[in-house]
Image 1 (cartoon, rainbow, N blue to C red):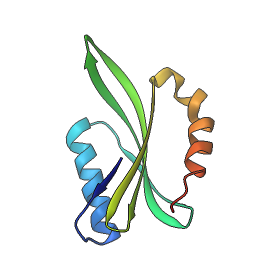
Image 2: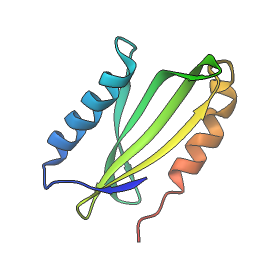
Image 3: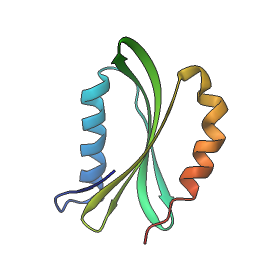
Image 4: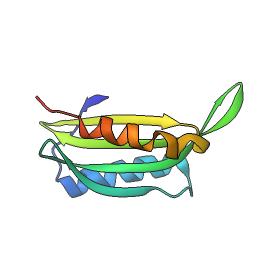
Length: 101
């Protein structure tokens, strides 16, 4: 997802993203780490999420969020919690391949 954002510092951007996710996941733990991919500083967020489509599912969510040229760039990976470790290497390789042009 790419969306225009107001001009803010990286720290303000990071805080806004974490606060937005917290409003969606309630008291669930949000793991956040600073990352640099393709020379662009960003935030890596990992958190559980619940989604209801007929029935309720728990989803393991991993997001990489970057502030780039007045826009927010978000790359999201999801899987079932029981498959999180299985897909972790694939998600990591995929994220490392992100390029900004």
